[in-house]
Image (cartoon, rainbow, N blue to C red; front, side, top):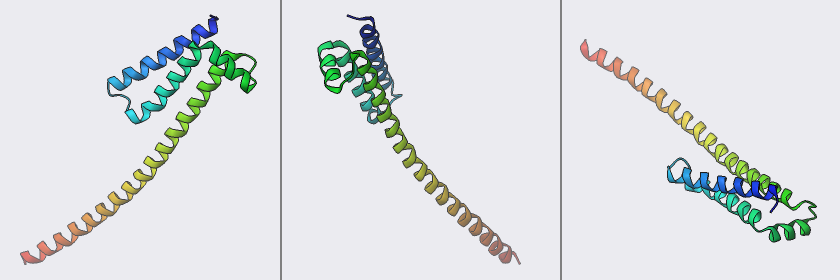
Length: 125
């Protein structure tokens, strides 16, 4: 086993254990954890099963098979960033809409408060 393979196994296990621990403590929602778990498992399988890694690397034309691990890791990170970009865009739109609705309610409340104050003032006379 090469040193780069050992490093890849350790990193993959570290990611997998960290993600499971974050889910267990409730710090990472399940819907986001799926991508992290999938990437850690794929990296772990490719790290441990050298023959599979060699075959995929040969089929894709990659000369140094362990570098395929880093390519796969990079692609999963791109997927995760894309996933979070979609979520952030959605939340940004929801936040904008919510801010607009709050502004409308605030304006309505202030106008209603002014009208109510005028009516009470008239009742006093």
